[in-house]
Length: 204
Length: 204
Image 1 (tube, helix red, strand yellow):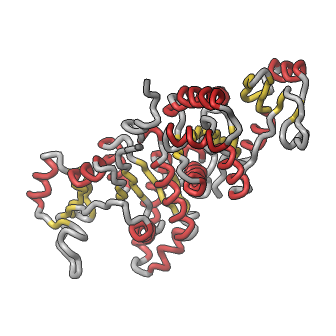
Image 2 (cartoon, rainbow over the protein chains, first blue to last red):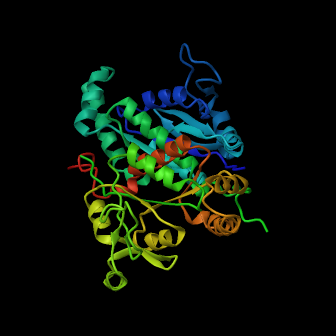
Image 3 (tube, helix red, strand yellow):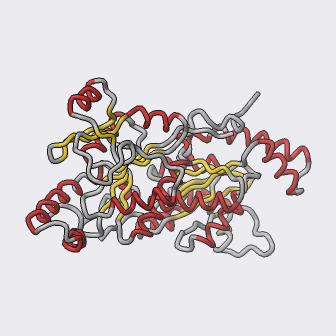
């Protein structure tokens, strides 16, 4: 019987690369993947469900979690604090479940330190020109905000070599096939089978 | 535009694990994979085609190739010499084509030294009991030969940690899906994209 620990898959991407759509597809197509509910100090928005979309806490509670080492990664975004609780993550991995996290480049670097076996996946648009087109097509941002996002994307893309895999998002189906292949291949990695292969080992 | 070097995939397996069937399937399902024609000193058998099944040479020719460093790996099997010519392999990889080689554990170790980026895949039957059943079902070997093959399989299986990936061959379709996933995932590895991502790099 072959047993293995769960694998932690971390997907990062500059805005406009299509990360949200890809991760939504992954939840549908790979139902056995575990996810993480982030904890945040930002106010709950209409329609958001406590414990499903986020765990909403006040800043002292967040700081206390941080001080106790309960967060696997955390970041400040637009003045609010966001973090990934470590306990449910550790439990899923110990139980042999694979986990998919959608985390920015800073959070990914923190996760890599805490989980050296984590699989880091970077998603990019096919080109900067394509990325700019997508940001314009979203129509959610003005020109100044788009310019800011593009500058930030350039900075983030420069970090691609820190990731194990690169997915170029030409279309969702192709990107999803690549993500699925990466998850399936990583499950076959001998480095993840340390405790396993008992039946296949030489027995005298 | 993203360019990359070809990747070298090396599949090893103890006899009875299903390697021949898997590699035949791979040739059909992944037509863009390049293969290698081995050179051998064993006599040509009826139906074998020179240059397609093997390159048939005499022993002095083989030894001369070996001395000139023209073989990527070589081995003696039942008194005959077998080797993999390096030149066509190197050419395919330089052209960005992926190559699949079906090589025994000794050859795989030689290839790993010459091609540190090679992807080593180990194929096994689900258990030793299953392997024994398969060897009996083949009806091509007597009991003594089966016992010899099982002993050899035990020795080879002990080497599984030297490989990057392990495929447990429960059925051909599942094993083929895993091999396909490994090839697809390795194509996304950032470590194979050294010269690439020109359009995505930050340009000032």
